[in-house]
Image (cartoon, rainbow, N blue to C red; front, side):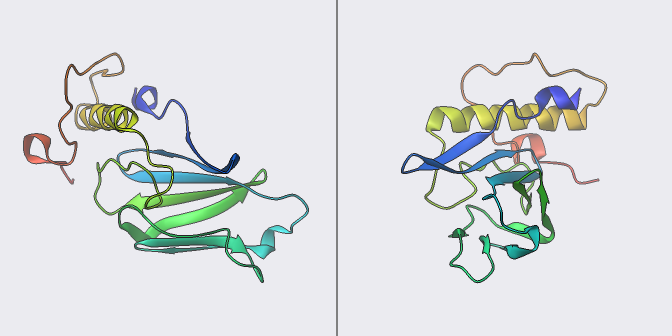
Length: 158
C-alpha cells in the first residue's frame, strides 16, 4: 500500500530552457536524477555529498552542480549511482518527514500549492508507515495540512 503513496511524478528544475535535474522525495529521502552527457566514461563522473552541500561533475572540469542543499542530510546514508545514462543521487534527510521545496537552495523551488501537495502526500506516507494495516491511498486533507514531523507528537523512531 505504501507504493500507492509514492511520488506520482518527478519535479523538474529547468534553467534557460534546459533541464538541470529532476527530483522527488519520500519521508526519509530526496532523490535527484541527472541526465548524463553521452560519450563520457562513467569513471569520469563524480558526486561529493556533504551535510549541506552537493557537488556533481566530470573530473577535470568545473562542476555541473555546486550548490548548498535546502536542508541538512545524513552523509553516511546518502549515496549516488549511475544507471542508464542517469546519475541518481539519494540524499537521506536528517529530519525525517521534512518537506523540501527543492533539493538546492534558491533553485527550482516548488510553488506554494505544489509544496502543500507534497506535504499532504508525506503526511499520508507517515500515516501509512505508522498504521500498516490501513490503506490511506485515497485519503484527502481539507484545508491546511499539519507538519508531518511534529503532528501528534512527531514521527516515531522505532
